[in-house]
Length: 509
Image (cartoon, rainbow, N blue to C red; front, top):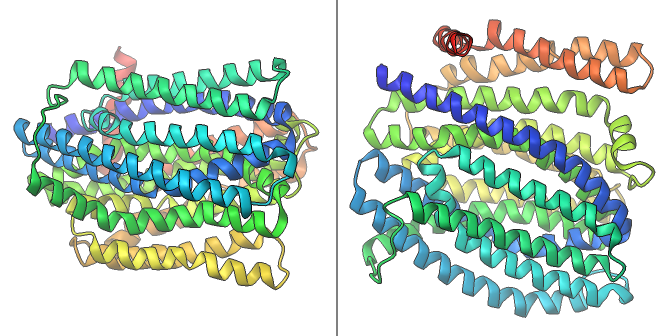
């Protein structure tokens, strides 16, 4: 029990650090996005979005390895095997370097052809788009090499440093936003180059920190064949899931470009900036919980694993909902204040639908993390990938029949509802849990939360005139009502005791 309390305290501390980081990053990102959109213009901003998005389309190999490396680091930490940790690092670096070379070559061959012949771009902006493409490819290569070091930081639960890197990244992007209007040459090219510089800084920060503080980060020219095959096999099934989600996001981006051109890509880009800022709060929960979730499963503590999955589900859902609610209600005013007169058409409706989908998907992440901890992922990833990929052909049919662009996101929501139900079924096949217990402890409280919490903010929104004061009141009421409902309805008895203990410690200090 004492060990569990210590684990809960680490989760609480890490979550607080990550949320301080997220609030800072959110505020900086809001200003940076507006400044960059104004400096580049809607067309160039849309071009950057679709070109950089095409590069990230190839990142599915990398994202599959991210989950794999983090899982193996945490699993070996749960077993307290220092030698195996070093083997995981050596093998992960070898795999990442190989993936980096393959991805770089594929992108330079396929990407140049696609941008030159297929992507809908103004002819006079083709050379600038190509420069952005090359910068983005190098950035992706550095991100691939960065993964073993970032995974080690998270596995050791060094969230303070993780937060420092994120804040540094946000500050550098803010500096770019400040400097960009004073550049008189092609700003799109300079923006792409400066984003590459940030990627270099991020890589160096993770690399030197991991080398300095983690004993297992010591490369030796050895090849651990069994572990290499095991990690590749594990990541191979993750590839289906990563590729499916990449195609769902960036594939739809290219599909919308083909039907509507770069202006719609700009609207989608702004909407996803809002989502990226808010989804970080859900990812913080995952980052804080995941190391212990995997380690508990490795130790055979399945009850603790299940408890962490339920808690992660509820907290993740509540966090993203309480932030999405005032943003959705006040989206027109927020966009007006944030972007001034340069709001791309359809941005508001895109943002509302994307946020609704994000709230729904927050329940899926803890299920996926639990399956990753178990390690038996073949059927889970295969079936889910097929469901996720179905968005593309359905959206193509919808757009071909003349439906407006926002229907892409309605289809996305419907498919993700099916995905959630399928994920619950597939988890049951590899990890023993009760549908009834999951429904009573997670689903029903989240549904009640979604019904009750919006009532007061909705009333205020419709009674008051649009203004900054209304925005503040709606936001404040959303948070206050959520805290009260979370404590009295959603939290279990043990979770309430834990929160009281944390509050008492803070007050005593």
